[in-house]
Image (cartoon, rainbow, N blue to C red):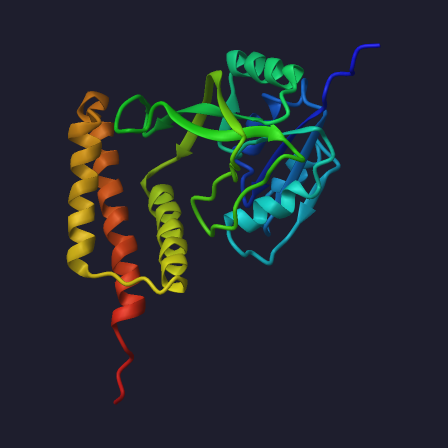
Length: 261
């Protein structure tokens, strides 16, 4: 008798995602075997929305960073494969077919990356170094897991494992407005600075300025952000600002001392 089809779970870590969660889950609910959601303390309607789609809704308010939270969420996954999504992402039909084919193939040492196409400030961003934005998101649950990084966490890929590309895009509704961008980027900058500080790293204002200028030139000129119109310029400028802020945050943490007065 032929082997049965491997099972597939979608896993998310969330907080205050009632604006996006339903639309995200509607793109997967009809064809996955399991939905696992780990909340870090939502105060909106995230839980009520989540429970319309799954009974596997869990809460962990002891936030240790994105990597540790994903590792904890994976412990609740029972399916053979896990597909990681963020609430602001949507699976397109072409990507769905590619995911199903990968799971059916069931190659034990293979992980899969998806391509994200971001909708930012009223436009799809196809340049700025943002597309194709490939991230490893699908793998056999028993094969690996995320690292423990506080931010910009990655799936651990050991020697002997292979990463293959999935066809189709995940649409990424990354920022709703400028305020959302600034709040989100400030959180990333704080986590980045904390992580670097724990490793004994230091920074300077001049480093922040140089990295910010480099970020803008790379995104807008080298990566052809100018082809994304005004949104490309705005995104490049905001990214430069965010880059400066994270280096400035690290400098403040490590190079300044409180007044002794």
